[in-house]
Amino acid sequence: MKNAKKYLWIVMIFMLALGACQIQEVTPPATSTPEVVETEAVSPENTETVPVVPTEVLPLVDENGDMSCNLVGPLFAELTEEQKEQLSIFAEVSDKDWVKGAENPTLTVVEYTDFFCPYCVMAYAELETLLAKYPDEVQIVYRPLPLDSLHPTAPLAAYAAESAGRQGKFWEMYAVIFENKSTLETLTAEEFTEWLLTKAGEIGLDVDEFNADIESEEVINKVTTEQQAMFAAGVSSTPTILVNGRPVGNWTAAYLSNFIEVMKAEKDMLTECPPFVIDQDKEYTATITTEKGDLVLELYPEAAPLAVNSFVYLAREGFYDGVTFHRVYHNFMAQTGDPTGTGWSGAGYQYREEIVPELTYDEAYVVGVARGQAEGTSGSQFFITYVPYPSLNGGYTIFAKLIEGMDVLAEITERDADNNPDAPEGDKIISIEIIEK
Image (spheres, one colour):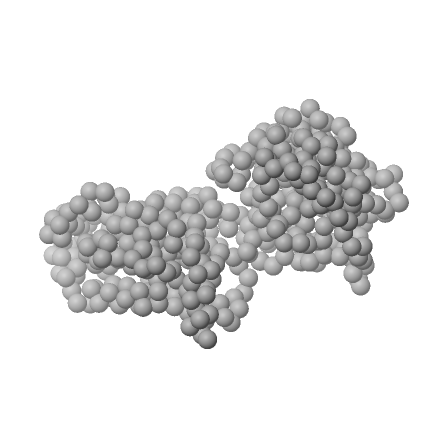
């Protein structure tokens, strides 16, 4: 039964093999990318009308009188016992590893790599970009996984890096091999060795000592032992990247930057459900002051009390001040409410959707609550539609209507965060004023 579970897990994370050099058909028996609170990206082409079914009426507050909600755990939650067992094939970072970057990192990136794998060269460039962007937040850990059946001289490259490390120049040799990969992969072992000896001298190594080390039993055994241990565990794709102990399939700097931004934001997330601060019998408007001007919303406290309460509470607390519009399509909607600007985060809690048949997306300028794919994942993110969008009916809470500032909404800068995470940050919300009558 244990083996059946193992191979089921392998199938579940087959996506890790995409964009990788691999010599077997399976990938590591390890956990998938940690779940994030990223809101679901809805296609702006989908305008099919969906029937609206009202949600069940449930209590608005808990036993303490606070708003009914569920707290969102940290991005890298504590591993389950099963996950720990499955991840045990990957050794913990130790003084045996080659490590560079922050001493107390937010993000530890372990790379199992082959110097001649084209995807590893891409990963090298991305991780260098990430480290340059977050020098005090990121730590890079190297582990050799030369796929000699695909790249015959890859083990020699690993021996060279290990040997250079013995003279305190590991990362210099690591960089110079990766940066010359296209030239080196065509060389014979003899030609490659001559090139390595020349470079060893250029980076300040004792060449004789270096030459002896790359042929030494100790260096060869160290690399080979790590390589064979991974092969035996089913890890045969490079690069295999672990982030804070978990394998991830996307190792671009833009994607991994999102992890850092979310983890930094988690320090300020709420650890309790917010108080219930609105009166459903009163009228509420909100003036959102942006870099482009003011947007005035009429809120619907009776129809969507949880959403309105959350919005009003967060607005009064200044949560939205400085937050950007991170996803904007002028033929669809403008979305904001994530302090990280990634679309992955929020205030630290989620609540159930509130669907009312009388409120639909059949007209423009409707204000809805963004959510994830699962039910009960509405949160701090919200969007304002530019056009009628009936396909959203029944799925996303409507809690307000834009009544002034349509011209301002039209000026919000388009931003495709889903396909261009490196785009300049979106337009900012300066402040939100809540008027209660």
